[in-house]
Figure 1 (cartoon, one colour):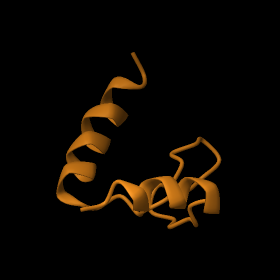
Figure 2: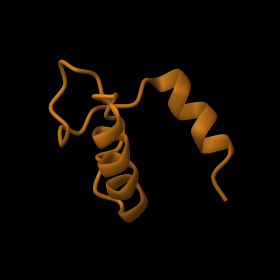
Figure 3: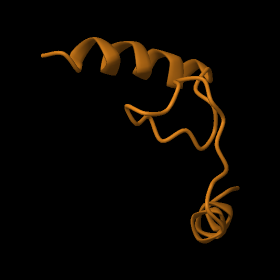
Figure 4: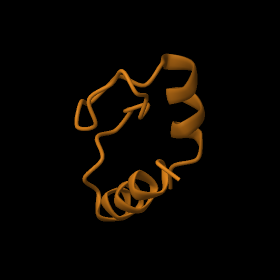
Length: 50
């Protein structure tokens, strides 16, 4: 039950682009901290960009 508010708010912020790229959303990570995407995942994401 405690995660429902975070999911609702996070979903809206993600939709409007307020969540920083690469943020894992972990409990030990500030919600607005941008993080680097690991190189292996970055290559996969670049392959699917238009």
